Image 1 (tube, rainbow over the protein chains, first blue to last red):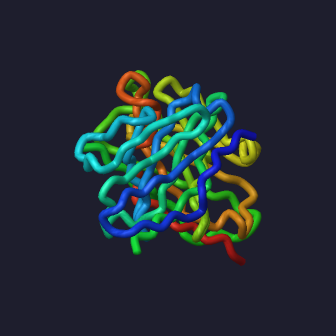
Image 2: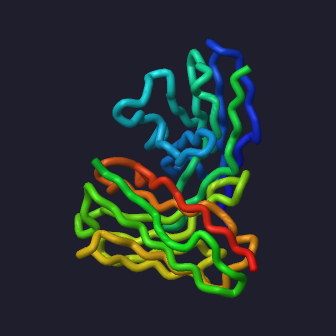
Length: 106
Length: 123
């Protein structure tokens, strides 16, 4: 079955940029989206179609993709950005989520 | 404004069948391209996609759980129902339903999500 691989954890200091990667076979030919999930809450879409931001999402959230690796970048990370982040893609009409990355803002 | 809310039992016994209902508003499941999906999350673990139903009644299931899942829709009541048979303690999780954005508006992502319902499987 298709898999998306994310690092389990990323730590960042307030005000610094944070990058979270997501890799998978042939990911370069699939759209990737990213969700933010804060403790006890439902996931919220932060990036779709690799690099697009939903209306109202702060500009410090950005997405990119190179080859088979997608990256979510948070510039000027704030304490309120501390959360779990999940990438998601489609493979043969099935939805696949990455294993999630816990972002800690130290 | 699109909203979704999950409802159903919060405690089921092993081997029982779980039936969950997603009641939504702000969109119609008769609109071309629209879908509603179910996703679950065991405590402290990652998201896992379960099933998806489209406006045209096309249905997709997680390959690993396909034998146990059925998804249906009631467009008159704006509801989507998920049934999962032969429940086991490992199925203990928060179950979310979510609106799948039509391809012409996005990349087929889920937005927004319901609040989720925690289902515990225990005798």
